[in-house]
Length: 379
Image (cartoon, rainbow, N blue to C red; front, top):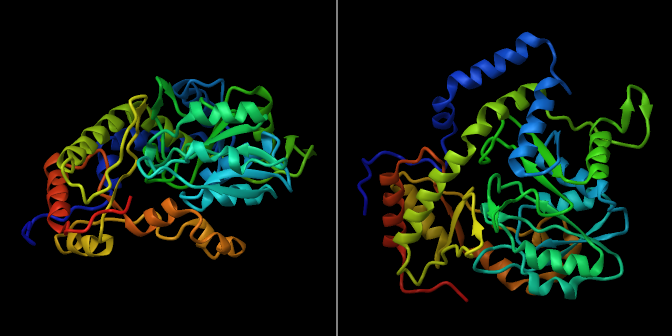
């Protein structure tokens, strides 16, 4: 195995990314500090315009977090208490919480083992007279099969709200994610492909009414000061975060290309490793590679071996929402979502960030291969 004296490899290194554009970030922060305008000002308006253009949508509305973006997008699209919303079973719990916060009920559908995204072939069976929307998640930065999801949604009169929290810049048949449904929710959590220096999020849409509704909801429900039209929330993307995101946005495609080169190193290294479950990418998809995740026959032993070699990994997500403490009423679903539960036990996220040295990436791959035993990942 690799020697213990070799340099440690972090899972992600935000300082490396910020060092690359340090002068631009300092200038952006100073510009806001000097302006004296810190909320709902010109930096936010400019970022909203620039990110909408990047995604290929008419509108972008900045909000306080990715969770808030998804909740407000659902509310603006007409999801109400008592409705049902179809969600992937395998996702970060925030996808479900956003639904719950609208008063609606999440209805989980299992995912594809090859892509970890919602299995569109199972959606129709989950639709009832109470279903109002479908939330496909572009997990790990790989686009869900939006053509299949949209076809089902249109046949049943349902809204499609993309959860694009991990997919900034990903492409689906030549179009950016974020432009493929009635609306989309992005997170700008610091570790995202496009990350702020704190929490932040945005809703993108081509629908004028949805955009207007999200703008209303994000600021207490007031269109003019003290003119309250509805019960909204306090969820505003701060000027300083918008300025930081503006500085980073021109670098996003280059960073995603670097992630793609690293993903190819992993994929080529694992091509003959039948014991590993390696991400499959459809011909029509161009992932943003927010994460590179493998399924390992003994995930915990592999993680420990990597840690011994100074290689940091994470596990996304060891407890699916339906088995978490947030949703005790869903515990009866145990065993009915087999792919999700299998992925929760097997998946391991490997180091992935644009500044990761390709040689270090190859070292991670070699160490993973050295840990693979005779067992195979369940199919």
